[in-house]
Amino acid sequence: MAETGLAEAGAANTGPARTGTAHTGAAHTGAAHTGTAHIGAAHTDIFDVRLVVNGIVHTVAVPARRLLSDCLRHDLRLTGTHVGCEHGVCGACTVLVDGVATRSCLMLAVSADNTEITTVEGLAEPDGTLSPVQQAFADCHGLQCGF
Ligand code: FES
Image 1 (spheres, helix red, strand yellow):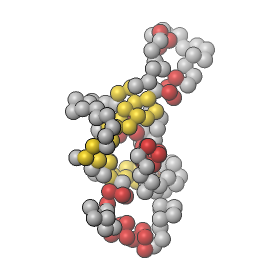
Image 2 (cartoon, helix red, strand yellow; image 1 turned 120 degrees about the vertical axis):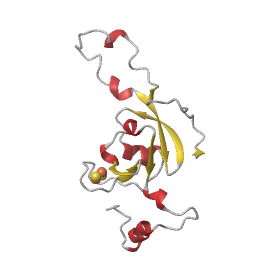
Image 3 (cartoon, rainbow, N blue to C red; image 1 turned 135 degrees about the vertical axis):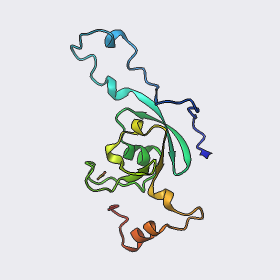
């Protein structure tokens, strides 16, 4: 498989590696969770996630709450994955995760660690020839909204 040039987590990777520093203090060891000390802490944790997307290995640093759809579109610039309802209803964000059709708006990127993902871009032939599905979208002008 091709590498993206980003840091590879290695074969022993068993889960996303947290690279943030938000949980370093004694605040998480005590029983009392009072006051505002924890507000925002979970939102700043960053995890390294290894994704094989369309046969290319990527290691992406993402916040814990980053949706897989947003990771594909914004971090990997694979904008063929569209976002419509963001509620798992429309199917515009569907990708294959380990061969299973999955609504990427309902999956966190950290949950996809060490999976193989196929987006619509991955359906084309190596020479760029569109797959029948891609051609049908083009023929039916289904590209703007992705439905
Ligand atoms: S954006 Fe509609 S199902 Fe994901």
